[in-house]
Every structure is written in C-alpha cells, then in structure tokens.
Figure 1: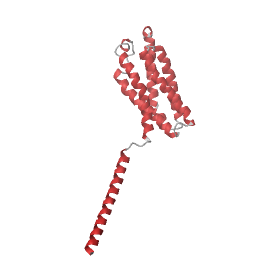
Figure 2: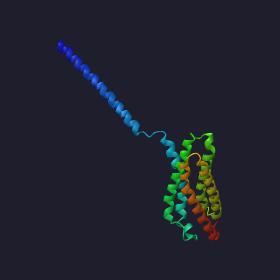
Figure 3: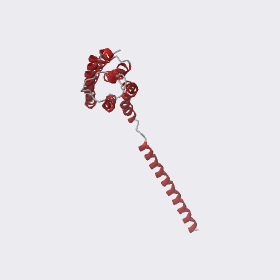
Figure 4: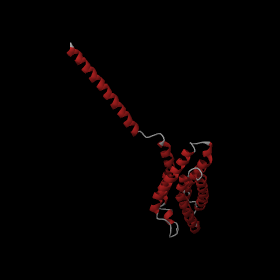
Length: 200
C-alpha cells in the first residue's frame, strides 16, 4: 500500500516537473520570438531613411539612359566629379537626410502641428530634388534645372535652419547635402553657360 502511494507521488512529481519544464520552454520560446521581431519603433526610422531613395532610384533610370548619350556630348568643366562618384554620394546624402527627418519626426511626436514647418520644408526640398533629374536629364532643360537647383538649395537651407532648434544632429546631417548642392549648382551653371545650344 505504501509503495502504491509512493508511486503515485512520484508520478505526480514527474507530471508537475514536466508541466514546469513545458512552461519554462514556452516562456523562453516566446522571449526568443520577441527578440527576433523588429520593434515597431524601428518602422518609422526605416521608412523615413529609405524614402528619399525612392526618387533617387526612379531618377537613376533616366540618368543611366542619358549619361552615355546626351550628357557625354555636353561641354563640362575639368573639375567636375567623375561619373562613378555620383551614385555613392547620393546614396549617402539620401540616407543622412532621411534619418535626419526621422529624428525630427520622433522629437516632435509624429506628424503634429509643430512638425508642419520643419517636415513641410523637408518634403518641399525633397520634391524639388526628385524633380531635377527629369528636368535636366529627361527634358534637357539645363536652364530650368539650374533654377530648380537654386530654389532647392534655398529650401534645403531653410530646412536645416528649422531643424536646428529641434534636433541639432538632424540639422548637422543636412550639412554635407548643402555642400553638395552648392557644388551641383555651380556645375549646372557652367554646363548651362557652355551648352546653350544643346538645351532644348
């Protein structure tokens, strides 16, 4: 009789241990899956960072077609950057400005009333940025593209200034972009000056 009672107790202990083991295993599995899951806070960061590249990719389709043909025929200054440099430079600049816009979005708590001006200016300069390639390379409007670049540089500068009181890091991320826009504007002007007969 005592042996029977002891066996039942042993079976109960084993059952209890098995249940505990399953519970712990399930808990560890849940923790593992949670750690592998991308936090929702990352989604806006990824989205804002990648957004500028959308226009860059679409513009690249036009550029690749025109660089070996029309662009090669243009008179260009000797100090111009080599063609291979533009893709990595723009990839870096798009990434930095995109992440900067996320910092502003995060700092202001999303698309709030306070975000209208800093993110509105950013959206405006991004639209002008995307428009430049179809105007210059697509339509061959060298003069118009220069005008767009001038307005773009001014809008991007206003964007950086509006970001500075909100998040200094975001504003600093715009500095290389502004420097490149000034170089691009000078290059665009020289090409317009020396190729007025090739502007449609």
